[in-house]
Length: 497
Image 1 (cartoon, helix red, strand yellow):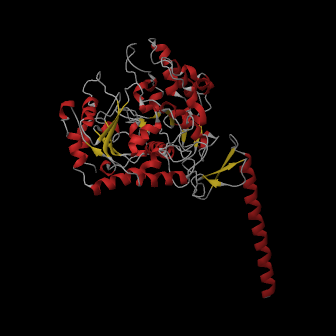
Image 2 (cartoon, rainbow, N blue to C red):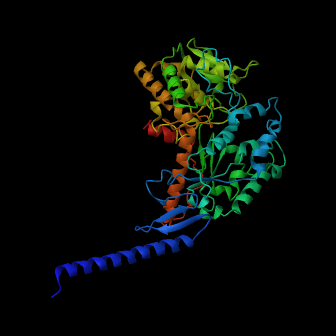
Image 3 (cartoon, rainbow, N blue to C red):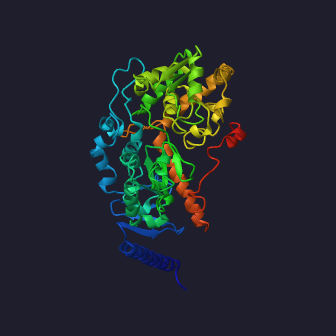
């Protein structure tokens, strides 16, 4: 009979041998796996849940692609390295960007596209976060902010979205008045041809690609080949229809999205935002309402003229005439001073549905008054609350004759002080969401307009991936037109909810 001590020693020896063999096998598999399947400096292993593990030669740790340890999971963005003619060359030739006007675009390129710092605050502006920003440079500002995005990747296979740094608005501004449509469309055609030949295109055939424009999306949706028609055909090119565009005003097509116009305020730190919000809460507002703009006599059914007449007829309204010789609308200090002194700011449509003034008024804590859903409600879905009654007043005017004398003031006087206070507080809370923070820094406590736009794009693309995973066609509905986007009836039914 075997002694207990001997049996115990034998068991320990066999256990040691078994453990050594198991460890050797694991190390052998690990070493073999690390030598195969290498692509673009990344090796793929598999964990117990059959999820890919990503190993980068430049990193020392293994991180599951879907791990909660990776704060950038689902947020990685790859930036295409476009030929310089699509972006930087346009900036080098900035004197040509404003052809046909007396103003040069060159000074506005300072400070990463924010423009020159504003001097002479005159007690209106509070700190050094203010710049003379040109609205058409949104694409430059966005690109510069994207360069500092915390989840950039040089490996497109890891990217959830692909950013195209094409300065579409600046490019088309060179050719908008050219009678030759081939010239107008040349850059757009060259761009999509370049993109469609890149390996990143084949991942989702462009549906994970997006670009940004500082002009309204209609400038890129010429529907015919008649030279008299406005704009380029960029968004109707087959490859472009697979992409998404973010611009200051979206069209009625579902792959166009609106993001805020750039304002003059570009905070570099949280404190600047908090201080400005506090200041707007304590402003004295002697004017009931104000309007900054010019009449549009050549536009059929424009209500601008009646809005101006009603403002001029009221002692409670302040009118800034943007059509006058001095044109105070080009002076940020003058505009902000009046908006800060007003309870409500009128925002009727102009040459297009949307207005930069909407965002300047919100920045001043002035409650916007809209007359058409296409000015804000059906546009800035990523940045404004769904319940528009929380931050604005809606006076639907379907026909110019529907706006009778005194209507605007009557509606505004009918709003209680309590309702007014609640709306103004909501407007002030919106401020960080509608400004683009200085690209050279990053806010910690707030998500700015850039952050919310990126979030919206990523969610949109993730939804497409879900559709593909379910075996459905991702093209269905992706680039279709929405005929109800700019109609009144849909918003009348919502009643603010």
